[in-house]
Image (cartoon, rainbow, N blue to C red; front, side, top):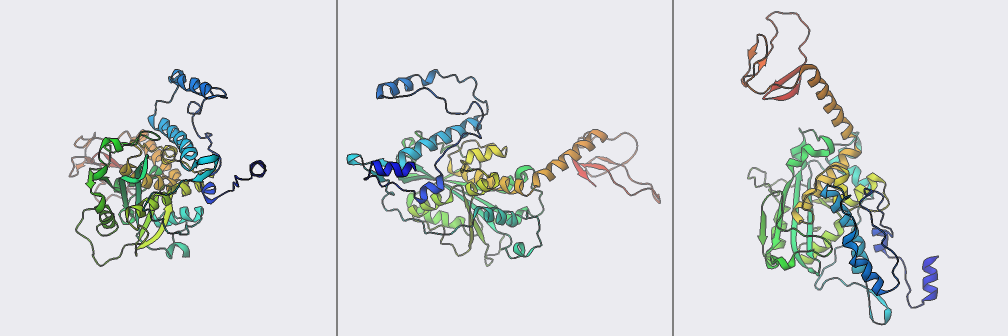
Length: 415
């Protein structure tokens, strides 16, 4: 009704919903934020002078009650920056008060249209790929491609000109590496198997290209390895190599004839695909690409929230420390970590991990903490190769089967 009233009062406006509004929604909520991390009402402004006066006093707002966790504060800043960017960047006023939509950067090749699975199917398939499906023997799971490789990509562009791609991050997770490893709480036991890479564009290394208006860029703060400087013209070929053997592992022990299937992952994946095509890298033109997934959509389905969340906010929901966000390499790794957190939580894996932790804690309370290597237990016993004392049954004894709490190198083992 409001839109009809607007168009009636201003016939030249001709405003209507577009796909863009369906994607981002019409509301930005702060219901998930801490009580301190919320927008603060300063007053009404009817004139430019009144507005300037309010702005001049913002530094006087109390900061002592902000959370000490920088990650939570950063998530709030990201949401405010998103609100500001949506209002400023996507619609710009033209002459005579008319509005026009922002045009894409010059020489930008639009990403091809593709049909992603509905949000629920993305999450279900991701769990099946990771071996977290509740029914691993059902027909749907058996029909999936086995041992896929997740490759997450994140692109950072200069906020003053999105045609300048300053950073690209790639993170790789081979599900074949996870087969004998328990996921742990929020999938954190799998984090060490994620391979992260960070590429910086040589032509845009000058600090003047570091974002600081809407978000705080940190191109020098890659936390998962060493950054690699690549010329703008070489970025497409470098990214292409990430989608082929050895998939950023550095290993030479692989079957060159084996075709490994890839799942492309992102947080707001379409934006990163558009940037890839802008650089001349057709990320979807891969013969071994079997699926495309978006952690923003996956989390939205998992949480049943109306609006998608920024990456930092998703990480916070799964108690994952997201330091130095807006570094493309870090964000790519964090995107994979977020996907693992969503899948493990939705599959009930966190409850199982907590049960195991409680069981270990109960045994430790009964038998005491594991002994350090080399410490002898009271009483007699034979020592194993690590110097730990292990009580052995007497020869020929008919006692009950052995079961209990043993140690090896100081780590608890269930036997």
